[in-house]
Length: 599
Image (tube, rainbow, N blue to C red; front, side, top):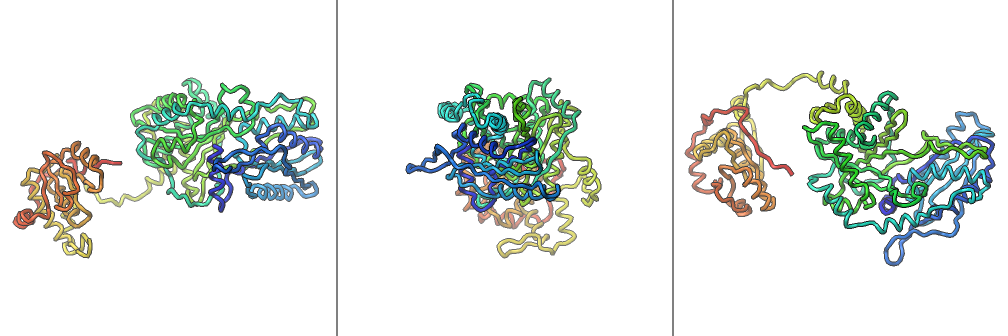
């Protein structure tokens, strides 16, 4: 994860530093500012990795450089003389200014503190760090230690011995890389495409997101937690499944991938739960939706799949995407925040109360869309979105669909996923209000509709290509001649005719002719690999292949499939003698019209 954050910091120099993280703490009680500053200094002495900078050595490798000591960036402001509203505005300005100052990751320390006095016994402590130093789990640990160090006047003997971050790095280096490669390769096998909501643009400048928040009420939250407990799954898995369903409906894909932040704190490493540093990793979550499978079984299957991958969460995202072979797998992320703030409890001899002011914190990712969830008596959901890529209405709709999906989990989990409707009442009402301007064509066929148009406007241009123009009458007559030739070759309803033709007027004529004959057309792109074309022809078993002399040379051999060369002299002679009226084939709307092999 540090490697990825370092890359983004070096690469995205022009936009905002989205990985600058800011925490604001509400400090109550009689405060000695010098004593608090000394306690912070003691934290930096206690945890060497908080003094880390990241530099490239002569070999090109990037290393963490740990100075023996660093100068603590510390500022103080006194706003106690200002009216409350002005003080709050000034506090916000100070926090924004601190957050906007970019860190140079080669120059430690990568954290800054601002202490703001609001009243005699009320302060706010602003801690701005780069995410490369700390994860969310570390912050409550630091606050507990800071409170203890303040009470002990900076004496670290009052705290347990630190388990150094170096031990985690040693553990990480000793993991079974081939086994992790194999596990992720298997987990992503068969994935045909990434899940991207916005165009890929490596040159896009970073930008701080807009934010939407919603909380489920206590009853719905309790019902969701109870359902998860009874199914033997985590709330995190329930949210992953629901978010996968939302992305599936939004993209039209039934096999979706998004990123998720995992804790990375392996319980096999002694003391890991109390260690300070960056342990998290971003890994893909794949949600393959079978429309016939119930929502409940989808959730339980996802839990099983994710559990198998837990021991391989250490593998870097760049390597995982390399194994998948599809480039960027996703552009949306999900974070399930379950940090131990409820364990903070101050030591009995401290006169300070330090608590997070959660509404003032700043954190983000570089993804266009990030979902943040936090458990509690009311499930907290936050959607961060780049408003230059995703408009507010779309973001609101996604969050509404998520809450609807979570409601269905507890109300009707046995419903097949293919029958889950995530439209809101407002969206459904809007769709119902759209006037029906589509002409009634019950029982009509495409050739019949085309012929009606040709009768009505015979001299209107129908096809324009490479400077040539065909009117509706000309297109109809030429398609009819070819359709008669096809029926003479035995092509009709329930047959398939393959078309390997360049983009031209002849391609339009051929498509219409096949439909007039009652057959289905199978487009073949001559640029496809021979193995791909061979599979398509072998699988579809067309009764005839229409192509040209030049294109035929680029196609694989198709034994058993007759070939009709449209530009051959004998074909031209045959067509000239065919009738210009439509063949007398009896067509029905339920006859196959088109065969396509998707990517």
